[in-house]
Image (cartoon, rainbow, N blue to C red; front, top):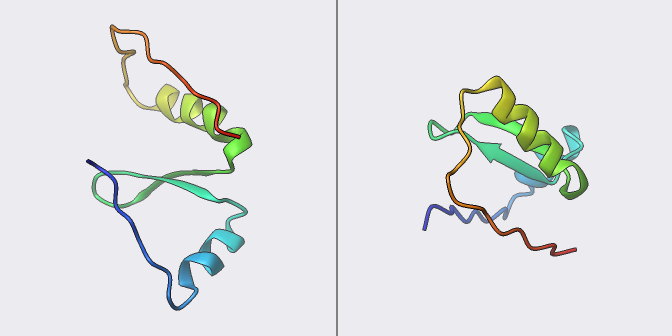
Length: 68
């Protein structure tokens, strides 16, 4: 399904996210960090990321749900 679930039994991820003032991370396929964000800034962060990459918009409309 393209989702990697990670457990943080030693608190390393919590520490990393605290250092980067983020709660979300966008990973590249090679597992380098492409972007970090918080839920309130994720849309803007993804738009900025897409603008520096050569991404094209999908032909079909994408539905978006607000979760928070």
